[in-house]
Length: 244
Length: 312
Image 1 (cartoon, rainbow over the protein chains, first blue to last red):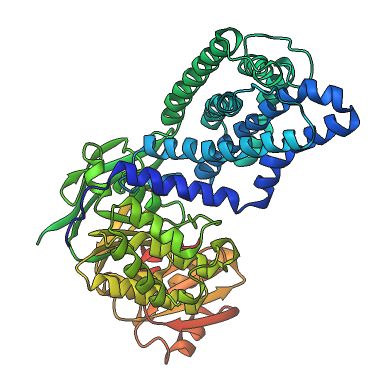
Image 2 (image 1 turned 180 degrees about the horizontal axis):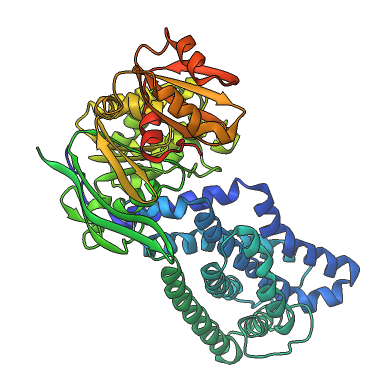
């Protein structure tokens, strides 16, 4: 039999990303979770607390959206481990790194869509945006939080064995990030990705700022969190799924 | 003859459990080689080592000339694995599941599209090709599971219990498919605890138990070792008299051997057994709940070697 050409990593990455994305959008419960959870807070803040409170917390609500990706990514890889599909892929000429990156990329695509929808909904429900608010930064700040969330998700995926346990344990990361970061209250810890992002988002959205402090500097620190967590997550995940 | 797989003293231990305990195999290229044994015998662990999913605890193994620990990437490009479990993506269609494996192997789009449709047709799945697999019956999912292993036309295929849980009709479809695949110079390793499957499909087979090979040969050779008699199987009430009943039966010159199986059954090998059942019953003098007479099977080979049934 004729041996086929060495498969290209970029093509494998593309096909796996598409596969992950299709699997995600075809599951109604996942769509409800990704878009429904932040939407609940928009509606709650806008109609239960009134426009004034809503305007104060709107930047935090937008940051809230990509945090749900922690459970999404952890659940995705836990599901791959639990169902055996990860092992099935490993018997083909695809590397673990490619599989991992495809998981991250597909979640980043979801994050991009999610952030755009959240920005539109926040605006449509009456949040006031500063006339000089930089649109790129309004998108990029939550997107960077999404990247950091995926790092947390990857770490969690290294430890959990089932998708259901990933979903449950993710709350132990999501809730502290949400409350300690001051997304819906006053920030308690200033040096975690959510508090850094909420501060930067507020500065851009409410005051139209593009200053290095707090926007640029906070973005650098969020990126440091993201890179650190992702590298650690990749190393741990590869170790935990290595052949024995 | 070229060798597809060669192992020397291959072992895999999980703590105190000796899942595979020193297996030596030499499997020729192009053959359909059966690995028969009860659940937990070490069949799947052996397959997982040979398909590079697991590292052996010790021993050597070469697959298609490549070392399983040092040259795993070369092996992965040349093999296909159909796992025992249904390992498919439920929220992809049948076609998408099969395409994905072809894409991971770097097949050209035109080639894998044509081949996927051809394979789906052979497995009677073409009309459901674009349906999500989560809505499929167990039999249909298992057929997709098989197709994902073969789409890239591997040189060596591992089928790990490919028909487990299938209805007889679907089992026949899979068997015909495996036979068809063998005709394309592909080496096939088939693990099963279904004696009929092993007997019907294998050119040669090993029977393994507790991680060790207990016998090896063609199905006819193995059955031939038991002699040419028929197999008579009795169900009895008197458990404590089993040995005595067997000894009484052995006094008849046409009874070649006898063994207890489980608590309530006795198996005898008797020449011309069907016509001489009444003579045996006269001699053993015991109340029998039921009796069956059949030709030798691989299960009888296993009973002869271990005193247990394959499914015990």
